[in-house]
Image (cartoon, rainbow, N blue to C red; front, side, top):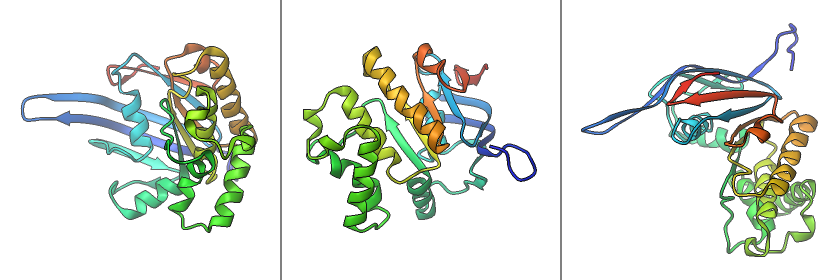
Length: 231
């Protein structure tokens, strides 16, 4: 999306980023000198073989893990301290997460699962309910809000996970293999929802995937191999 001076705005900016895991006997480089700029409103997919660093990169963008070296900025904000309350608040308000395994709480009904991110914002119960119902309606599941995760299909669970990710209207959605546990029909339904969200709300989306067909539906593809950016 162009800024006032006609330049496109970077929602995610990563410069010379590396991640090294060290023990007393071994050193493993998970990411090596990654440079990545993701524009506001862009839908980026990240592909590569298992163990190449895709999820590590997504976790760093999501402020869940800290790089060993390099710089990351989210919406122009440089991240200095990952373990601070300010970073946790920033993560809750700016980022939404979707996981391959859904991560729904089985003892909570669908509405309560979707409300969870709003509880940490100290939003009142009535407003939480209104926002959560709207999010479930946007993914076609408002009629299931009193059901529990065990009563839903895999595709429905992932739609609940999307509703939970978008209920707080984040700037960025980070999706880790969101179609990995679904058949092709359900996977395409989930992709349809993500693409519609990206186009209508201009939400920036970064998605890790093994599925080349899903990656082709996004704006741009980045490839990783052994922690190194190759495309």
